[in-house]
Length: 72
Image (cartoon, rainbow, N blue to C red; front, side, top):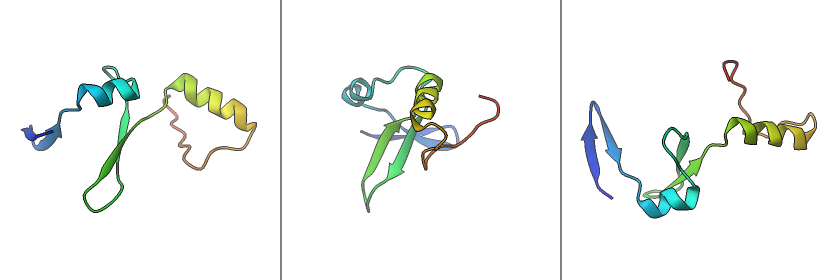
């Protein structure tokens, strides 16, 4: 992958193999996490339906990574 200037920031194109593996589509939210000195990971954030299903399975106990967003 190559880093390119995009507006005031930098951008990296995600390879098709990663898009396919994560099932990404236009408009999806992703998270890029630093995992080591020179490594990172890309995670697809769950959609509304997936988050509601996770809430139902916990029956009142929210997962540690849960963040409530009033507008959603």
